[in-house]
Length: 142
Image (cartoon, rainbow, N blue to C red; front, side, top):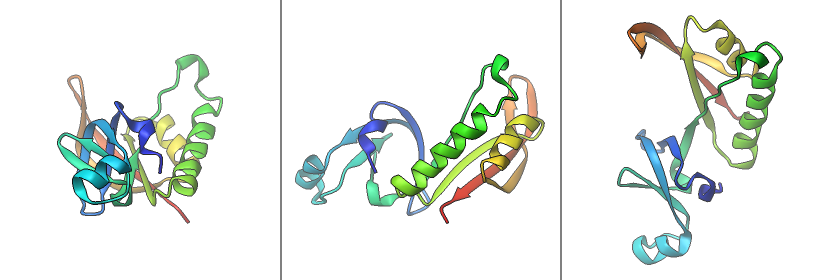
């Protein structure tokens, strides 16, 4: 997995211990990690936690489409390629995403891309002064 591309980007990853880390990632190459920690793999540090390549089991993805491009399949096609790349080239076994239950277009994109609905959080999403049910999706390599 090329962790360098996540340097100074806002990310959300789950590690092999079940920890979820959200924040701006700082990249540390294998030479630094070997000197400091005795391991020869790259890592990112998120909010003070070092997460090595082999410890990442889940990455969350998101998308936003200009209104003028709605309904043309761009989001579905792009998400399918991202899921394929993350699972086949980067070795990420599980990719997650979510949407508001009322957002039927986003739900269709997630489903058509091969993602599976895994849970519903009643009242789990607040935008402004409105609360929505949050639909959680997963895509697993296979």
